[in-house]
Amino acid sequence: MIDQIKDLKKEIESTEITDEDSLETFRLTYLSRKGKVQSMFGQMGKVPKENRAVVGKAMNEVKQLAESRFQDAKDTLNRREDQIFSATDDITLPVAPAYTGSLHPLTKTLNEMKQIFFRLGFDVADGPEIEDDFHNFTALNFPPDHPARDMQDTFFIYKSDDDSSEDLVMRTHTSPVQIRLMKDTPPPIRSVIPGRVFRNEAVTAKSYFQFNQMEGLFVDKKVTMGELIETLVMFAKMMYGTDVKYRVRPSFFPFTEPSIEMDVWWGSEFDGQWLEILGAGMVDPNVFESVGLDPEQYTGYAFGMGVDRIAMLRYGIDDIRTLYENDIRFLNQFSA
Ligand code: DAH
View 1: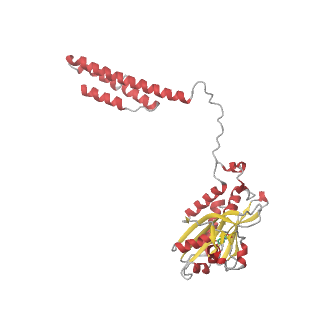
View 2: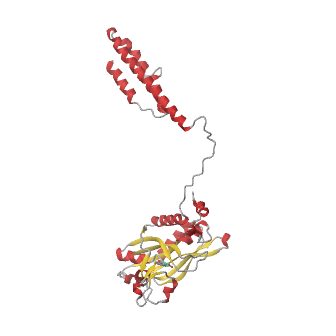
View 3: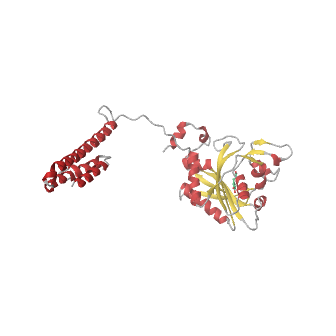
């Protein structure tokens, strides 16, 4: 009997009471009329007379223990509630507004773009914002003094008078990272490369001296133009919905042959018009040669997307400059 009482005592001591439910369970298990304490007293009849005094004392101690544990736990829980509301609190008062900040629309757009390409099996790479002439131009099949270099109004960090191969530039596009990837990694390569680029251009609602691109490069054996277009169309549908209105046009870039551009229809609320969102094409054999890959063995496609344009279309932003002014009234519209 004494052992049973000791066990019950241990049980009561080790029961955890953390909330109203466990408090009620405790009360039912130990303190109710059919509870364990009461049924313990019920067994008193079996105890030989000479032991009753000792056993009775032990039983009373267990009963007191159960009662005091119950009362202590109840007090603690009540106190916790008092801390949440006291009678003098007005819980209908509006709380002070908390400004939590938000992701920049460019970051949001870029995250979505990356997610889409993760699903298509691409990984993410990056490269430096200051480039040498080789990576930004020459390896991409822009010959020295070729007029195609004028397509990209360049900010020079260093410009040599007689040897352009020594020039250092703020990269004018993310395409130089294609060259770095192909030099470093044997095919297959399937990467997207987001990053900031710089152009010495007149600032208008549609163009800025810095903006963001996301380059894509897929190099393997037997990559086709059909796969390129399929990928771009899938991207447009995942970004803007399956009813997106798009068109693909032939174009020219020195580093792709053939080359294309893709436009997306810019909703009529902003005087409907086509907005170019990317350039793309099949990697030019000269580019493969500049990185030491055999163009007879490998084929590939590349694309360069304008992240700012894509964000503007996504959120109905009609002036690229708002993306860089960090006006809090503009940025707050993207918190959610
Ligand atoms: N680099 C080009 C630009 O900045 C965009 C581009 C066009 C990237 C075609 C590509 C490509 O990878 O294949 O205008």
